[in-house]
Picture 1: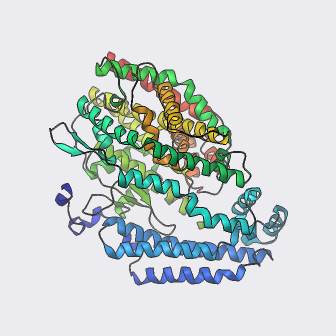
Picture 2: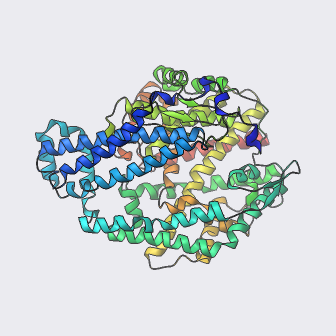
Picture 3: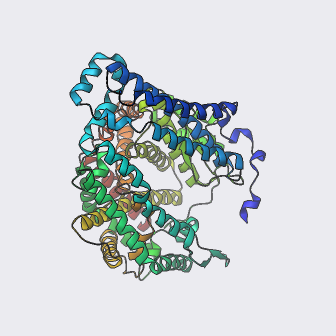
Amino acid sequence: MADKNLKQRENIEERYKWDIEAMYPDETQWEKDLELSIEKANEFSKYDGKLTESAATLAEALKMRDDIWRRLEHAFVYAHMKKDEDNRADKYQAMDDKCGTAIAKVSAAMSFFTPQLLESTEEQIQTYIAREPALKQYEFLLLDALREKAHVLTEGEEHLLAQLSEVMGSTNDIFTMLNNADMTFGTVTDEDGDTVPLTHGNYIAFMESHDRQVRKAAFTNMYEAYKGLINTIATTYNYNVKTDAVSARIRKYDSARQAALSGGNIPEEVYDNLISVVHEYLPVLHRYIALRKQLLGVDELKMYDVYVPLVKLPKNEIPYEKAVEIMKEGLAPLGDEYVNQLQKGVDERWLDVYENQGKTSGAYSFGSYDSKPYVLLNYTDTLKDVFTIVHEMGHSMHSWYTRNNQPFTYGDHSIFTAEVASTVNESLLIQHLLDKETDLDMKKYLIGYYIEEFRTTLFRQTMFAEFEDLTHKEVEGGGVLTAQWLNDTYDKLNAKYFGPALSEDEYIKYEWARIPHFYRGFYVYQYATGYSAATAISRKILTEGKAARDHYIQFLKSGSSDYPVELLKIAGVDMSSPEPIRLAMETFKELVEEFEQLMQG
């Protein structure tokens, strides 16, 4: 209904729309790029069986491989983002689909590359690198591939696994269909007395309502739906974990966790450090939860009371142009080059600012190696949206620095490092707002907002990570993930994290069943490690000044040219040590203490 009141895209001013046409001023070139990518991928077969016959041949093949993927990435990004402008446009839906088909064809045509590369020894590759200057650029990529050699199977076995890949990924598809297509959550009577269908999209808004009955109704409806399907979802998740365990065993890993972390060469102690340090600081979270109970004035604090803001946001609309100024002020500690480039990004129309009919919801940063690092927004003049701009521009500036300093080979980022760049920006902004705020209510709101960011990112994602660790160990030890086991395990964990101020709840034990990230094993911990690293880095920038800033900018320039833990060391943070997590937890402790004084004083 509300969609009808949105503008059509053509009625939004050009300056508020991304300059995506710069990618393909003439769309006939898009067609040519797609066709050429497939043609060149087929031509790549000339290296089949000859890939490592000489250093020069290997160098040629690597360059050609990069060129093919670089062109195809550019075409895919354009089609995907044009579709996101207005999902009703058949033309761009078709172009996006054609890219998917092209990617599959290119992948198949070049699939011999890794198995044949891994027939070489490290000694042979090192000799080639020393002999052929063109291979120097690919040294990290090649040695990283060889590092995983023990876990790559024969060509025939790999072919069999590739054919089974769709089947092995089916549990995620089943859960997605259940969660997004088949499940309904009833209706909720909102604060205005209107009856509104409950959806995944509006659930958190209901949970933030200052009307407790609205929160309770949304919470109850949501988990009644999962309770009704809990045995089906438990079976689905059980087989998802079994798939992780079996896949790891086939590839000769000690565990599914080791397999998941191996891709980025992440030491397993990073995972264990996160959980153990967060456990140390659970008493601080318990103290905050007790304060929440006191400030809400409830006899029993229930799970549906944990999201509502303890301080109402003072009314204050922030136009987009003002948001840009706030962003530049908040990120000033990153230096003139960074801030000037932010403004240039705004002027060069990196950002697609306002919602229009058919536009994809939410926000993201996206682009190809050869495009501007674009940002999709749906800006609505709120403080939360200012943080969204700052977050997404953190990703885009990371891309800008990387693409201007790294070849295409290392022009991307792992999730482990990508979330750091966005969260450093958010940390710097909130510190700036707190430092300059004179209105007491606004200061209370900002501290409360910052505490909730810690709770929902660092604590919550660590709790999820701990749950995943327990589920995989249960299956790897010969156990079965029944609904009762999953419910009981999750219920105990939730009680452990929230502490004694939270009353028992009959529904929270079902929460595990609605987390889609659990179908991508050992993924969510990276949100917590990224948040910890970003908190440590932002604090270093604010306390140490230019030296810390220069190290951080150097990190932004590094792309994926080394392993994530090594890259973060450039910024002065060692995630193989518990110290960055402890530093983040100390920041949380200071915030809780200040909030207590402000709210009780």
